[in-house]
Image (cartoon, rainbow, N blue to C red; front, side):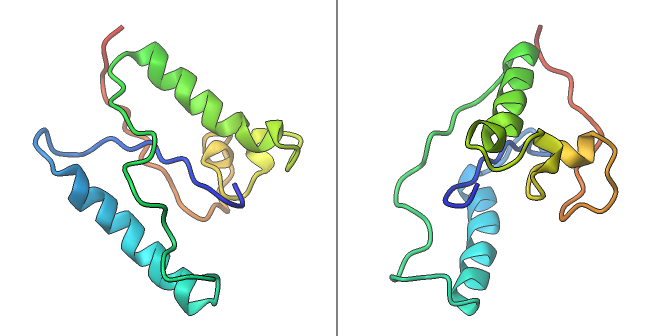
Amino acid sequence: MPEHVHLLIWPRQAVYNISTILAGVKRPVAYRAREAGLLEGPHFWLPGGGFDGNLVETGTVLAEIDYIHRNPVRRGLCKRPEDWRYSSAGFWAGQTDVPLAMDRTLPALGS
């Protein structure tokens, strides 16, 4: 999305520090935005934790993925989810020229 990002992650270790994961994502993005002149003020990210939560049911995870993929379509930015270059929808639809490849190993979740 032009002004926000949706990120769904699955930590690889059973024990993890979400702050470390978020810093690992946010710092390089903010640094590159600053280098590219995309910052009007001192901050790239809004303060606070965002709208985060733990998803534990398979159906909930799939519904969230569908919501994320359809977001640019709902906004009128593209016709199909896989047409939005910065979405994982293209990767899951079989496109190979994507900015970021996903891990095809899906974890087991509850029902």
